[in-house]
Length: 352
Image (cartoon, rainbow, N blue to C red; front, side, top):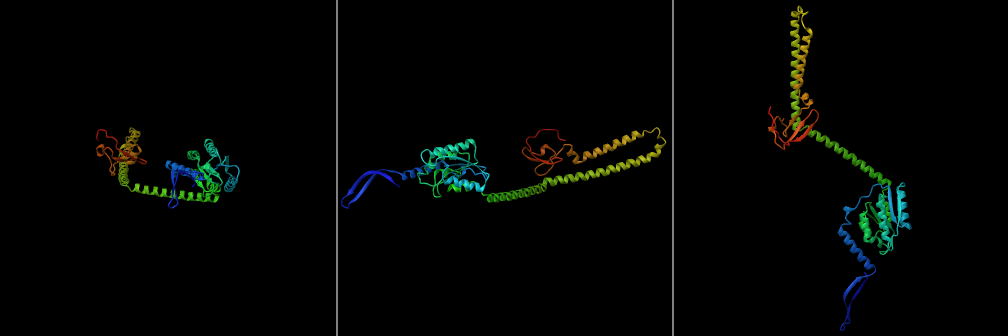
């Protein structure tokens, strides 16, 4: 570190020692640049511009890559060669800029802003070859650092050699040690992409399998729940009752037919004056009434007509509003499906 010093010189005559009393000191040349670099780095880091949380992810397969670099030199040639070798159908857009000297950082800033305004690229590479600290100083300007941080498009830096670090490297979404490395990082090789796709396919298959197994488990638990078992018992009882009513109905019909046969002989003499059509109509009405009674007693018929069976949280059938409280969870069984509900309000009504 080279510095400029101001002070006063004193001599200790007995020993011949000289002593410099310093009252002013400042770095010069490379020392001044290094100090400015460290001060800016510390300030931007304190602001959070280097935080990993604010860095944007790179697209897996970018179609348009913006190159911000000098149109002359080995850096641009190496990057184009690598990118074309990896994926020949890429759209490469070069924004030529000066990469060192006065005003170079302003051209780089304008290039970043152009790509963001035009939305002309999926990712940007900011690159230049190696050089001294002074040669790379354009990439240490605060204005450029803030332009990189403000970019909506992810930016990869490949500035200098592997040992060179600039402020732009710390702010960028990804730092590559060289321009060639930046080209290799921006897009995976075809084999790497195939491997990535195979991994995603395996992961998707596993997630699908886990979801199916989870759905089966939830269905098993739901069917084993107390409310479902109680409903199953109720439906079984009602089905048994319906069978009994059906048996009684068939017996009643047989009895009616038997009675009709017994009276047939007696009615034969009066057949001419007997209203046979009316008798048939009456029997049909009677049969219809019995059938309707059977349908009314069937729980499935009740549900099909829009009624529902309401259960409380314990699985008991709710027959009165007094049996529940506001806030209690309910399960409502419909003809097809079940609903979950909660008591919001109770209204007074006639108890039956």
